[in-house]
Structures are given as C-alpha cells and as structure tokens.
Amino acid sequence: MGGVWCVVVVVVATLLSASNGQLDPSFYKTTCPKVHSIVREVVHNALKSDRRIGASLIRLHFHDCFVQGCDASILLNKTDTIDSEQDAFPNTNSIRGLNVVNDIKTAVENACPATVSCADILAIAAQVSVVLADGRSWKVPLGRRDSTTANRSLANANLPGPTFTLDQLKQSFTLQGLNTTDLVALSAKCSTFSTRLYNFSGTGNPDPTLNTTYLTTLRGICPESGGGNNLTDLDPTTPNKFDKNYFTNLQIQKGLLQSDQELFSTSGADTIAIVNNFASDQDLFFRKFAASMIKMGNISPLTGSQGQIRSHCNFVNGASSGLSAVTSSQQSDYDDKHLLLSSI
Image 1 (spheres, rainbow, N blue to C red):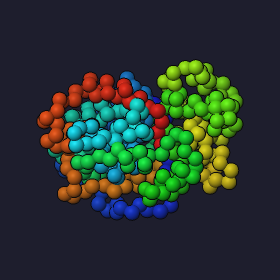
Image 2 (cartoon, rainbow, N blue to C red):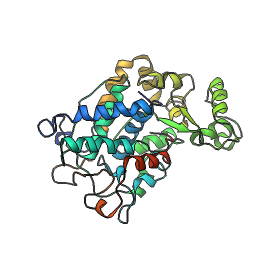
Image 3 (cartoon, one colour):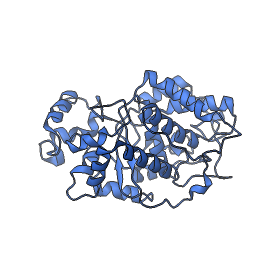
Image 4 (cartoon, rainbow, N blue to C red):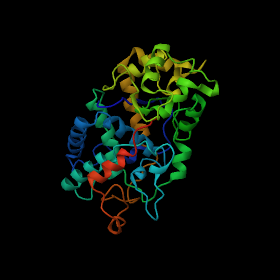
C-alpha cells in the first residue's frame, strides 16, 4: 500500500459486547450498490500522490472506533458545540486523510444522496486500503450511522500511545472488549520515538532492545539536535505492502515504536508466540487480521434511528450552514498540520 505500513492486528478471543447482527455487508445492496467501487477509486487515486494515505485511513477507522464506538466522531471539526477529538493528544499533529474522506463522501453523495454514513465510509476505506496494499479482502459489515457528538476527553483516555508498555496496551484494548492485541503503527515522526535512540527511560542511553544497526540508521534520520519532525517508515523492509514483515522485524529488534517492540521483547509475554506464528505464516496473519477488523468495527455502532447520516463528514447536519464550507484544498492544508506521529 502506499504508506508506511500500518498493520493493525487484533487477536480477539472473546466477542465484543455489541451484537454484529445489526450490521450487514449487503446493507447498501439496493440503496447504493456501487459504494465499494466508489471508495476504491478515490483511495486508489489518492495513493498516487500520497503513499501513506492507506495506512492513514486505517488509523482513522481505529481511532474512531476506540472513542464512542465506530460512529465517525473523529471526523467532526471543532465548533462552538463540538470539542473535536482531532485535538486530543493522540490525534493532534498526527491524524491524516480527512481530505480523502471528504472526497469519498462527495463522490458517494453524488451517487447516493443522504444514504451512506461517514462511519461506514471509514470502515470501507480501511478495507480498501488493505486490499490495495496486497492484503486480503473481507466483507465489511455495514449499517452504521454517524454521531452528533464528539468526546476529546475520552479520546485522551482511550487511545493507546507509542510509549505504552504491554500491560498498558492490553488494558486499553480490554476496555473495548478486545483481548490479546498486536498493533502496529503507520508512520512516525522522530519526536515519537527519539527517546529510544538517545535517552531511553532517562538512562542517557538507547533502548537496549533496539537492533544496533537499525539504531544507527534511525539516528541518521533523527539526529539528537534535530527538530523531531522528520518522518520514517515503520516497516523498513516492505514499507508499501501489507504483509507479515512487521512481525519479522520485531524478531530482530526492529520495532520502531516502543509499544511495538514490547509485543516481542517483554519477558514471558503471551504475545511472543503470536508474533512468531504470524512471522512464519502470512496466511494466518491475514485471516486473523480480517476477523479482528470486523470485530473492531463492531464496537458500539449507532444503528437504526440512532444518530444521523451526515451530509458533510466534518459537521453535524445543519451546523455547517453557519460555518465556512471546508474545501478540499483547505482540508488538505489542515491535514498538513496533522502529520502522522504513530498509530495503534
């Protein structure tokens, strides 16, 4: 895929509390039968100029579902009545792809007005992004509706960070009804992981679990005296593909973020065996990933008469009339200020 590959692997041993029966892959079969092809075309075109966009779209879906459930609340811009999740610590100067989501929404609205929710667009865009990066497809359950609220404080509380320990990662996912978890980020700014290179845990030394050759490479990209804004690929081997190399990288101490390497380097952790299994069996990884994305996408969806189908993903219906319209170029400028730090 065109991006620093984000691999989100969620290995779930228990079902989520919400019932999957409310969502259906054929939800738009008669009302918007071409929705998947429309989303695919927009994402495919976006990848031509931004190789990271697919990974960013997956991250948007993840960060949406972990706050209030999969309801597109992350897309709501700040207004007098909305305290935007985009300004939460894990999202600010970090999330990307909002302009692409708006382009998708415009194309879908032209074909099927007031029919497809922004929450479903995020779910489909994540699946399409994986497929375009040579990953395995899955049938996306659909029928979500959009929230009319956002919750920045909940985003600060619920979203895991790049320096989380394994216990902290597990706790974050347990709160969502998810169990043993392997997550990988998209792309990271130097500021996200520079302490691993120079002053790990206040020792004045690099993280001892980091491969020494990889350490030298990263220090070249992120000098200690630099501003911390340089970007690097999370997967140094196959950055543009969706594959199992994230796990093989962990085996040789090449996990970029501390929270990545924790999955393999935490002594006695139950995640070590899962990393090894996925590193040796890409088909197994693909199957587990697809199943887990479906389960993650089922976290507390709004359905039926709940919420609304937003006409513009950044605003609650009726609210945008009193605000300046957000053009694609303006949203792109906004995205430039929200460069990817990391994703989990």
